[in-house]
Amino acid sequence: MEINRIEILSVGVDVGSSTSHLVFSKLILIKDERSVTRRFNIEERNIIYEGRIINTPLLDDNTIDIDSLTDFFKKEYQRAGIDPDDIQTGAVIITGESARKQNAKQIAEALSNDAGKFVAATAGPNFESLIAAMGSGATARSKEDNKTILSCDIGGGTSNIAVSKNGEILSTSCISVGGRVLGVSSEGKIWRIDEPAVKVMQHLGLNYKIGDQISKEDIESIASTLAETLFEVIRGPANSTLARQLMLTDDLTFPSRIDEYSFSGGVAELMYGGLDNYDDIGQILADQINSLAPKLTSAVIEPANKIRATVIGAGAYSLSISGSSGFMDDKIVFPIRNVPVIRVDVDRSKLSVEYIISQINVSFQRFDLEEGEDIIALYFKDPVMASYPQLELFARSIEGALTNSIQNKIPIILIFDTDIACSVGSVIRRETDLKTNLLSLDELNLKEGEWIDIGEPLVAGQVFPVTVKSLVFHSN
Image (cartoon, rainbow, N blue to C red):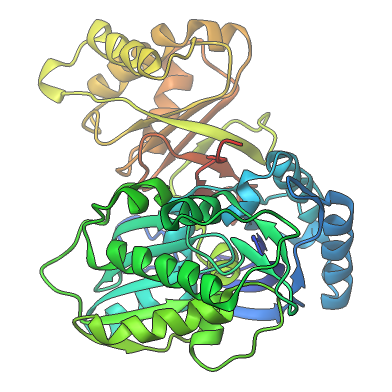
């Protein structure tokens, strides 16, 4: 019986500067009968559980309490009635100032291992901006209303900005502006100072330390400066010294006009009328941002999701689906985690075994990688025509370029933009000595420098869930 519909259970976990929480989503995949390859597309994303929100637990200023955090998320699974083994995809996002903590990478790995058999640990500022735009609803709104929307997700440590147009994200950026870069008790005593707050205070000629009393005027001055710096990035370009110091990415690339602005994240909850009880500068920062909003060139709209934008994006929008014509050796064990994507450029007019081998070698050298040491994914746009002579030539090139990987029994992962994965895999098996440890996937749009997790195949091995991610942890 042919399968035309698949349901996938996904989890999104967000460990942020201020708060941590998760969501569970059910993703509905439908086979596209109009497509030549009849590939599966994600048609629905339904949130089935929104977890409790807790303050991110810390052991000290530089260390997240990993035991408390993992215990909290285990209890959330129990409250939701979900077995970790039932999770098929999703992402753990370590965001904002939490990504600066000295054990951030260990936390991501621990949560990935505990949260399910296929969860990607990610922590790159551009990736956060992308999924926050999707999770807030801004990207979908840009498609529904045929508009260009600039969305800004303001959390405890960072503001993640994205420009969406007609359902596509054109540009992303991130700056260290958030409600918890400075922690102040109700009595006016400082209990937390993150590096961005230090830079702002230096800019203002202030010199406070943890434990000091701080005046309301100085708090407002710090929050006002953060808001002005954020708006410098939003309106672009960011030219001031302070803005450049606080930015974690490049500037946005702006289209001709922005039709709407949208704010999400914990600070946005306060901007749109929520209450603050976090002993930080979130409420004051929200007020300062609201005071600057009239300077924007278009209207500010309230998104569908605010504080949960990132976690919804992680659970519902981090997944890609391969084409339906992949090729897999049955000895490969899934999931395959943390695989770097290396682009190989092949000019069809120069096709020869020697030429393709040299292009693969150049790609390894570009990343300072040694062939045969680690699992990598070679990504080809459209290297050959689907004719047997060209496929055979390509197969022998792969065998010649990856001799150490084949000898060391390292899985060979080939990914194509076009629908040739099955043909390539079949010819490689038939014409070369590469008989095992081969995975060939297609109809995936990847970028060099990304990392991927590949989950267990679905629909009797026809399609593969692939999470595209970034593994960039900020330096301490």
